[in-house]
Length: 219
Image (cartoon, rainbow, N blue to C red):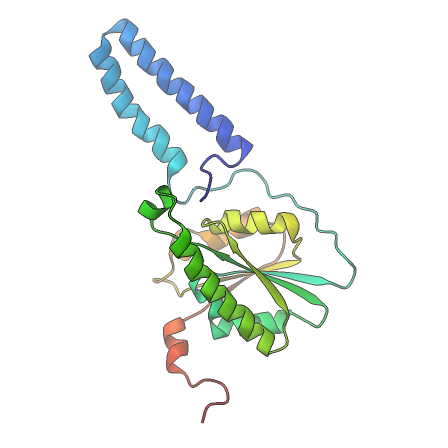
């Protein structure tokens, strides 16, 4: 579950907003009465909490990570959710991952808003893990060794977390086609390119089209 005040900037901003809220309520109580103070609270509180507890907040702190790693080891960070087992994504990884490459596949465990706030993430994580396992097995079958992990439900935060322990030279970000991708609607690709200082390749995976195509080796 994502902490809505995960960064120091978010935490400081949230504390300031809460202090301003209670100052406004106290001032209303002093200048008017308790009923006016209640109205002020009911009007302002939803704005404060919506701002910091919405489902897809942006990270504000600049991404900083140590990109030093053993010479000759090219590191590729792959971020994908439902498209993680897509053929197009695997082909892109094959093009970019050489014999001396390290590949880390991160699958954000997306969840419904109700389950998210109820801290019920088991089903979402299990589904993400199943897709991730399928993807890693497919990569291993074509001689690409890769590691995988379940990430934060916010893909930008998932990338940020991964880069702190896996200093990638490049990022491959996979989404559904336009019109069927929540990540594209949320501007995830543009935000990632603005935030992270390494090359980012956007791969569009059309799972419906891939399912209609014959599998490699099939007759």
